[in-house]
Image (cartoon, rainbow, N blue to C red; front, side, top):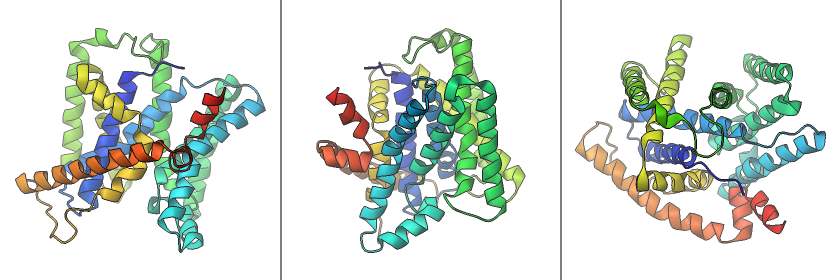
Length: 337
């Protein structure tokens, strides 16, 4: 069994917590104009960066059977819960709901489909370790997405894959660069990153300051032109890098807790938001940042967490629900061998 990186899991844990807080805010209509913008800007790009980074340590394949096996594995992890949850949440309108979600991924668990598409492209690009093939596959994928958008075809929401592809690819290429320069020789935490010391702290502070300025200055929810889109991407990059550097400096039980959360990101993502609106359904939303706003967000998050954890534990104790709801078929297949 491969040793896990506590730092990588901790970063995933931070991303999961941000997603939970973000849903507490937006689903209760408490968008404040700054905090939610910051969370929205960085939560999923951070997760995509980590997902791309982890591809670096996936098994290399040079046969078609190996490639198909990789794609099948990702399909069980991503597509099984994507479709199962869509059916479970709309049991009386299954056909209509599936038709809707396939053309508007954000009506469902969109990140699972996007992650599957990006991982499939990455598997094809890495096939037989050919640099020309790698660049060509990614270029072709992006061109096809642009053409689809220009044609007005919204099947599988191409704008989502196009937006997150640079973060996913960047995470992988960043890992390649770190490995080349000796900063990521293994998947574990035995790297040279601690030698950076005060320099990495200073860089993290600068990045976070820029991240804060961009979110204070620009709207991170909607981009009405290319300049605003560039600002959103820059915000996502600076915020994600700041968090990556900061998490490396966290030690002890705090990091252990974040790492534990990070091991269950998929489970958290598909369960938590069902409990986001339990407290404030019949109250007027608070949108001004202050003590009342903070208390409402915290209470919503605390209740969400208290309900999410036992539900995940319950579902994971049953093999069938673990496979269907969380895509963990590969876990049970490995246990057989």
